[in-house]
Image 1: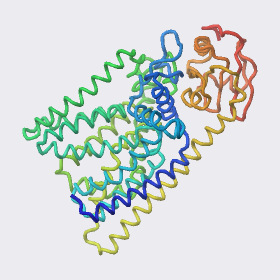
Image 2: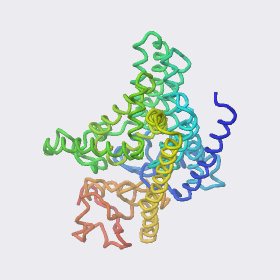
Image 3: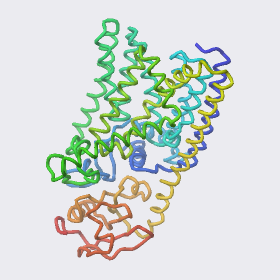
Image 4: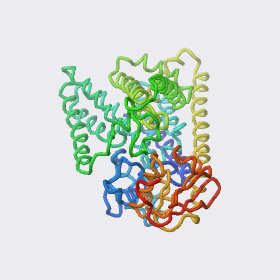
Length: 502
């Protein structure tokens, strides 16, 4: 147990970093990207008693047979971020507004990360100053700084991932109670991110050893109960058409938004292209991992893994990190390089920082105290700089785009409409929105007719089948000339579009 002085230090550090999180939230003042828009919009409905449903269609994965709205939500994503956001909206929505209220549970969760990293580092045997450095680095977040206050799985996964590895150590020592906690955390990680199910494989490793077999069985049963419960819900809601194929077998990423996508083995895509895409993903995701640990931490992380390789929780961290990296790169290839792998790393980040702290302590043992302290301070300052830069980059990447969309609202006729990012437009406009199907205008006509859409909105980023229309090519008879707002083109719809006609 830490003494009173250590508790005061980590409490003071956590409070200072909470202030930094709140400051970050002033920049992350709206959802920003599709996943977060989705979670926030559905959370608002959930808090109002509408259940896990969406009055927008972000992908054909969730389309009803009649293409109408609303639809059952979360047939692709899992529900824990939405549930946390809905709790915030229910408790604080009237006072803070829907988004700020939805954001509150994630800010509070992120406030616990410095303490979790400190406890993890101390559990790995590091001295207090190295553990405090780990707490500061995990709390700053680096590339995760804006993500930790987003309405998304980043902060919950980071906290639960750290707690999982701590519980795993005790379960490996034979504690059935710790095994139950580890199983509970695997279930919650799965409800945060689908690849969290892979953490369950580490539980099976416990079953191999007589000392930890009982803990491993208990943990596995608890985790399996979570998985089965969510599967039952998915089956009752109607599993998304081709869910696995759209996750792992796409030829082009935009086919995630097509009613009839091209899949590997059913298209003319050359095999060399498929191999090249996976090789490129391996490289891209390796770079993402390196930058997620702020470059400077990679060498101490490797030293920590090497020096602590006899500890079961460190072996579990390494094995799961490699497994998730390979699964994301080789199976969920197209998704991984568009943010999915970065999402996955959140569950590994604070405990990885704790391992790096242990590795740094080993590497710096032979140095003078002043030199070692200078290295520690330099690492914290570097991560703080990366954190500030990441927040600024978030502002440049997302806030401007949301403002541009909001400025085009007056050009969109009243009523539902079609757009490439239905979740974002739903939140910004407050109207029913469906995705412009990647199949093209013929399918778009069917969707527009089903939801009584009054326009199609095309932005500079649009699916390839709409490129000719966006560039001023021939329009079908049911579309009027576009109203232009910057790079956005709004095409009013005449009457009811003829489904199946171009």
